[in-house]
Amino acid sequence: MTYYTGAIMAVPTANRQKYLDHCNEAWPIMKSHGATRMIETWGVDIPKGKVTDFYGAVNAKDDESIVFSWIIWPDKATSDTAWEKMMSDPAMASMSEMPFDGSRMIYGGFEPVYERGTLADAGYYQGFILAVPEKNRQAYADMADEGWQMFEKLGATGMTENWGDYVPHGTQTDFYRATKAEDGEMPLFSWVTWPDRATCDAAAKQMEADMADYDMSQMPFDGMRMTWGGFEPLFDSKEKAAAA
Image (cartoon, rainbow, N blue to C red):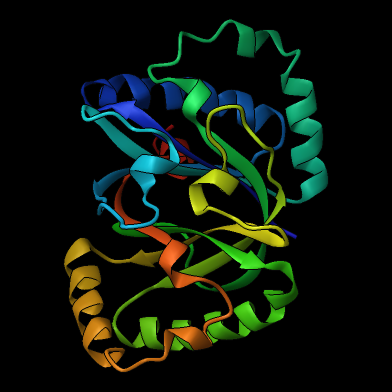
Protein backbone atom coordinates (compact mmCIF):
# COMPACT_ATOMS: atom_id res chain seq x y z
CA MET A 1 0.00 0.00 0.00
CA THR A 2 1.23 3.49 -0.87
CA TYR A 3 2.70 5.29 2.12
CA TYR A 4 3.37 9.00 2.60
CA THR A 5 5.86 11.02 4.58
CA GLY A 6 4.01 14.27 5.11
CA ALA A 7 5.70 17.47 6.26
CA ILE A 8 4.84 21.11 6.89
CA MET A 9 7.42 23.82 7.44
CA ALA A 10 7.87 27.58 7.59
CA VAL A 11 10.35 28.87 5.01
CA PRO A 12 11.55 32.48 4.82
CA THR A 13 9.69 33.91 1.84
CA ALA A 14 12.95 35.37 0.54
CA ASN A 15 14.41 31.83 0.47
CA ARG A 16 11.94 30.40 -2.04
CA GLN A 17 14.63 29.73 -4.66
CA LYS A 18 17.04 28.41 -2.06
CA TYR A 19 14.34 26.03 -0.87
CA LEU A 20 13.74 24.87 -4.43
CA ASP A 21 17.48 24.27 -4.79
CA HIS A 22 17.34 22.27 -1.54
CA CYS A 23 14.56 20.09 -3.00
CA ASN A 24 16.61 19.43 -6.13
CA GLU A 25 19.49 18.37 -3.93
CA ALA A 26 17.39 16.16 -1.66
CA TRP A 27 15.38 14.27 -4.26
CA PRO A 28 18.18 12.07 -5.68
CA ILE A 29 18.92 10.88 -2.14
CA MET A 30 15.28 10.06 -1.46
CA LYS A 31 15.02 8.27 -4.80
CA SER A 32 18.12 6.19 -4.10
CA HIS A 33 16.45 4.89 -0.95
CA GLY A 34 13.24 3.86 -2.68
CA ALA A 35 11.00 6.95 -2.83
CA THR A 36 8.87 7.05 -5.97
CA ARG A 37 7.99 10.75 -5.97
CA MET A 38 8.41 13.96 -3.97
CA ILE A 39 6.04 16.93 -4.20
CA GLU A 40 6.51 20.32 -2.54
CA THR A 41 3.84 23.03 -2.56
CA TRP A 42 4.10 26.68 -1.56
CA GLY A 43 1.35 28.40 0.43
CA VAL A 44 -0.47 31.19 -1.42
CA ASP A 45 -3.81 31.29 0.44
CA ILE A 46 -3.23 30.50 4.11
CA PRO A 47 -6.03 31.85 6.31
CA LYS A 48 -5.64 32.76 9.95
CA GLY A 49 -7.76 30.49 12.13
CA LYS A 50 -9.58 31.06 15.40
CA VAL A 51 -8.42 27.77 16.94
CA THR A 52 -5.75 26.31 14.63
CA ASP A 53 -3.97 27.31 11.43
CA PHE A 54 -0.83 26.50 9.44
CA TYR A 55 1.05 29.46 10.88
CA GLY A 56 0.59 28.22 14.42
CA ALA A 57 1.36 24.65 13.39
CA VAL A 58 5.00 25.57 12.66
CA ASN A 59 5.32 28.77 14.70
CA ALA A 60 5.72 30.74 11.46
CA LYS A 61 7.15 34.26 11.55
CA ASP A 62 5.77 37.22 9.62
CA ASP A 63 8.38 36.90 6.87
CA GLU A 64 7.87 33.16 6.35
CA SER A 65 5.68 31.15 3.98
CA ILE A 66 4.12 27.74 4.59
CA VAL A 67 5.30 24.69 2.65
CA PHE A 68 3.09 21.58 2.47
CA SER A 69 4.96 18.57 1.12
CA TRP A 70 4.97 14.81 0.83
CA ILE A 71 7.21 11.96 -0.24
CA ILE A 72 5.58 8.91 -1.81
CA TRP A 73 6.82 5.41 -0.96
CA PRO A 74 5.63 2.08 -2.38
CA ASP A 75 4.87 0.89 1.16
CA LYS A 76 5.58 1.50 4.84
CA ALA A 77 8.43 -1.02 4.98
CA THR A 78 10.36 0.84 2.28
CA SER A 79 9.82 4.13 4.08
CA ASP A 80 10.94 2.76 7.44
CA THR A 81 14.08 1.22 5.97
CA ALA A 82 14.89 4.34 3.98
CA TRP A 83 14.75 6.71 6.95
CA GLU A 84 16.87 4.37 9.04
CA LYS A 85 19.56 4.15 6.34
CA MET A 86 19.47 7.85 5.51
CA MET A 87 20.48 8.73 9.05
CA SER A 88 23.95 7.37 8.26
CA ASP A 89 24.06 8.19 4.54
CA PRO A 90 27.09 10.44 3.78
CA ALA A 91 25.06 12.10 1.03
CA MET A 92 22.67 13.47 3.65
CA ALA A 93 25.53 14.80 5.74
CA SER A 94 27.06 16.56 2.74
CA MET A 95 23.90 18.44 1.79
CA SER A 96 23.92 22.22 1.90
CA GLU A 97 22.56 23.98 4.97
CA MET A 98 18.77 23.92 5.12
CA PRO A 99 17.24 27.28 4.07
CA PHE A 100 14.65 27.10 6.87
CA ASP A 101 14.42 26.26 10.57
CA GLY A 102 14.16 22.49 10.64
CA SER A 103 13.45 22.43 14.38
CA ARG A 104 9.97 23.85 13.67
CA MET A 105 9.13 21.42 10.86
CA ILE A 106 6.38 18.89 11.60
CA TYR A 107 6.38 15.51 9.88
CA GLY A 108 5.02 11.99 10.10
CA GLY A 109 4.21 8.78 8.27
CA PHE A 110 0.68 8.40 6.93
CA GLU A 111 -1.35 5.64 5.30
CA PRO A 112 -4.31 6.30 2.98
CA VAL A 113 -7.81 5.68 4.32
CA TYR A 114 -9.57 7.15 1.30
CA GLU A 115 -8.31 8.07 -2.19
CA ARG A 116 -10.08 9.07 -5.38
CA GLY A 117 -9.06 10.65 -8.66
CA THR A 118 -5.65 12.04 -9.56
CA LEU A 119 -3.59 12.85 -6.47
CA ALA A 120 -0.84 14.88 -8.16
CA ASP A 121 -0.17 16.71 -11.45
CA ALA A 122 -2.45 19.50 -10.23
CA GLY A 123 -2.35 23.22 -10.86
CA TYR A 124 -3.44 23.89 -7.28
CA TYR A 125 -3.63 21.96 -4.01
CA GLN A 126 -5.78 22.37 -0.92
CA GLY A 127 -3.94 20.96 2.07
CA PHE A 128 -5.64 19.88 5.31
CA ILE A 129 -4.56 18.64 8.71
CA LEU A 130 -6.95 17.57 11.45
CA ALA A 131 -7.38 15.17 14.35
CA VAL A 132 -9.95 12.36 14.34
CA PRO A 133 -10.92 10.01 17.18
CA GLU A 134 -9.37 6.64 16.41
CA LYS A 135 -12.73 4.94 16.95
CA ASN A 136 -14.16 7.08 14.11
CA ARG A 137 -11.72 5.96 11.42
CA GLN A 138 -14.36 4.22 9.28
CA ALA A 139 -16.94 6.93 9.91
CA TYR A 140 -14.40 9.48 8.71
CA ALA A 141 -13.69 7.46 5.55
CA ASP A 142 -17.44 7.29 4.88
CA MET A 143 -17.71 11.07 5.32
CA ALA A 144 -14.76 11.56 2.98
CA ASP A 145 -16.62 9.66 0.26
CA GLU A 146 -19.58 12.01 0.62
CA GLY A 147 -17.21 14.98 0.46
CA TRP A 148 -15.50 13.68 -2.67
CA GLN A 149 -18.80 13.37 -4.53
CA MET A 150 -19.39 17.06 -3.84
CA PHE A 151 -15.79 18.15 -4.63
CA GLU A 152 -15.73 16.25 -7.92
CA LYS A 153 -18.93 17.90 -9.13
CA LEU A 154 -17.36 21.30 -8.41
CA GLY A 155 -14.20 20.58 -10.41
CA ALA A 156 -11.77 18.79 -8.08
CA THR A 157 -9.58 16.21 -9.81
CA GLY A 158 -8.58 14.11 -6.80
CA MET A 159 -8.65 13.71 -3.03
CA THR A 160 -6.65 11.69 -0.52
CA GLU A 161 -7.17 11.31 3.23
CA ASN A 162 -4.17 9.91 5.10
CA TRP A 163 -4.25 8.51 8.63
CA GLY A 164 -1.34 9.00 10.98
CA ASP A 165 0.74 5.85 11.38
CA TYR A 166 4.07 7.16 12.68
CA VAL A 167 3.58 10.65 14.09
CA PRO A 168 6.38 11.62 16.49
CA HIS A 169 6.03 14.07 19.32
CA GLY A 170 8.35 17.08 18.96
CA THR A 171 9.95 19.42 21.47
CA GLN A 172 8.65 22.60 19.78
CA THR A 173 6.07 21.56 17.20
CA ASP A 174 4.32 18.41 15.97
CA PHE A 175 1.08 17.29 14.36
CA TYR A 176 -0.56 16.74 17.75
CA ARG A 177 0.04 20.34 18.80
CA ALA A 178 -0.89 21.61 15.33
CA THR A 179 -4.33 19.95 15.47
CA LYS A 180 -4.75 20.22 19.25
CA ALA A 181 -5.27 16.46 19.24
CA GLU A 182 -6.89 15.02 22.34
CA ASP A 183 -6.31 11.60 23.91
CA GLY A 184 -7.53 8.89 21.58
CA GLU A 185 -7.25 11.07 18.45
CA MET A 186 -4.93 10.63 15.47
CA PRO A 187 -3.68 13.40 13.13
CA LEU A 188 -4.54 13.22 9.42
CA PHE A 189 -2.62 14.73 6.50
CA SER A 190 -4.78 15.23 3.43
CA TRP A 191 -5.16 17.17 0.22
CA VAL A 192 -7.54 17.88 -2.65
CA THR A 193 -6.24 18.52 -6.17
CA TRP A 194 -7.69 21.19 -8.46
CA PRO A 195 -6.88 22.26 -12.01
CA ASP A 196 -6.26 25.84 -10.81
CA ARG A 197 -6.91 28.25 -7.95
CA ALA A 198 -9.90 29.88 -9.65
CA THR A 199 -11.77 26.56 -9.77
CA CYS A 200 -10.95 25.90 -6.13
CA ASP A 201 -12.05 29.35 -5.00
CA ALA A 202 -15.34 29.11 -6.90
CA ALA A 203 -15.99 25.67 -5.40
CA ALA A 204 -15.31 26.97 -1.89
CA LYS A 205 -17.91 29.72 -2.30
CA GLN A 206 -20.45 27.24 -3.63
CA MET A 207 -19.82 24.77 -0.79
CA GLU A 208 -20.12 27.53 1.79
CA ALA A 209 -23.56 28.38 0.42
CA ASP A 210 -24.66 24.75 0.09
CA MET A 211 -23.58 23.87 3.63
CA ALA A 212 -24.98 26.93 5.38
CA ASP A 213 -27.52 24.80 7.27
CA TYR A 214 -25.28 21.74 7.74
CA ASP A 215 -25.22 20.34 11.28
CA MET A 216 -21.50 20.34 12.10
CA SER A 217 -22.12 18.20 15.21
CA GLN A 218 -22.75 15.26 12.88
CA MET A 219 -19.14 15.20 11.69
CA PRO A 220 -16.95 12.43 13.17
CA PHE A 221 -14.31 14.98 14.26
CA ASP A 222 -14.07 18.51 15.62
CA GLY A 223 -14.21 20.72 12.56
CA MET A 224 -13.16 23.76 14.59
CA ARG A 225 -9.68 22.26 14.87
CA MET A 226 -9.26 21.48 11.18
CA THR A 227 -6.59 23.51 9.39
CA TRP A 228 -6.58 24.18 5.65
CA GLY A 229 -4.89 26.32 3.05
CA GLY A 230 -4.23 26.76 -0.65
CA PHE A 231 -0.89 25.84 -2.21
CA GLU A 232 0.70 26.11 -5.63
CA PRO A 233 3.16 23.52 -7.00
CA LEU A 234 6.80 24.31 -6.30
CA PHE A 235 8.72 21.08 -6.92
CA ASP A 236 7.66 17.76 -8.42
CA SER A 237 10.24 15.02 -8.94
CA LYS A 238 8.17 13.64 -11.83
CA GLU A 239 8.71 16.84 -13.78
CA LYS A 240 12.41 16.75 -12.97
CA ALA A 241 12.63 13.19 -14.32
CA ALA A 242 10.73 14.14 -17.47
CA ALA A 243 13.13 16.99 -18.13
CA ALA A 244 16.21 14.81 -17.70
